[in-house]
Amino acid sequence: MYTQALSLEKQQNTSQEDPERLSRFQARIDAEERIEPTDWMPAAYRQTLVRQISQHAHSEIIGMQPEGNWLTRAPSLKRKLQLTAKIQDEAGHGLYLYGAAETLGVSREELVGQLLSGKAKYSSIFNYPTLSWADIGAIGWLVDGAAIMNQIPICRCSYGPYARAMVLICKEESFHQRQGYETMMALARGTPEQKDMAQDALNRWWWPSVMMFGPPDKDSVHSEQAMRWKIKRFTNDELRQKFVDATVPQAKYLSLEIPDPELAWNEATQHWDIGPIDWDEFWRVVKGDGPCNRQRLAAKRAAHEDGAWVREAAEAFAAKRAARRTVPIAAE
Ligand code: BYC
Image (cartoon, rainbow, N blue to C red; front, side, top):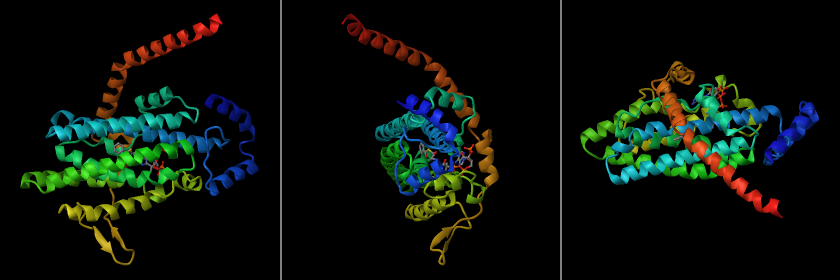
């Protein structure tokens, strides 16, 4: 179906820059209509979605690695089960999102190839190491907390398959956030050493989580157009502020200190002001020079190679089944 839609679009592409057609498309977006895979869409809208959805999928897949690091060392059976389930959820999110990207006419092989070659981006946050068990709590609390803040509005994205995929994903992320916060709460109320672990994890994950929302609005190259197309509903800075406002009271409740001496309540704006963000660090990590970028890609490449036999077996099985299905029809 999607191949048909794509070839139809190729014919239509000749008139793609047709201003009337573009304004009809924009009018549908403005009227909050959902765009579906077989609908006409500007090539740039398609490209923006493929870029964003595939980066999102890669992030879910690479995001399994820092957490996977603690599976064998979780402090109890209950914690191990929780973490296993959470990591499985992330894998599911990745597959859902690759599926949503495929509706735009790009194959999963191509997208995974872009990740393995280092061409595709994934979230900066997953290039930081998980040094202690408390990091698992901090990831759930802060990283999933940031993810929810960013992703709830995507449930209202103008592109149907992405918006629908986000509904289930957000429900699960919300559960992950609670699991992380509860882990932090157990540590923060535990022994002094456990509380120190929780504080140390917050110290290391706070700024990378704040950076997750992307560059400041003035440097965000895609925001303006993505907002016009209602792919994004809030700018990077707006979402970052929402995250800070929601998280500061949560840290207070844990009696943990956010590692920002300039953090202050602003009576005039009714928001928390934060100190300067180290954007040099952000861009270093995004460009491949974070603490774990090489390790993450190497692990993904090795897993992909090790899994070649599974893909081959699945293909052979599918071919066998297809051949079986054609026999009775041929006999008729
Ligand atoms: N890391 O113009 P901008 C998760 C790039 S999954 C790396 O503002 P845009 C979770 C950006 O791609 C987390 N790169 O871009 C999973 C662009 O470069 P390109 C992922 C970043 O797209 C498991 C350039 O900077 N979430 O939460 O309008 C367990 C300029 O940026 C980052 C999603 O993917 C970054 N942090 O806005 C737990 C959500 N930020 O592409 C949790 C969907 C920016 O031109 N994605 N860049 O080469 C989005 O909402 C948007 O794509 C972003 C960026 C807000 C991330």
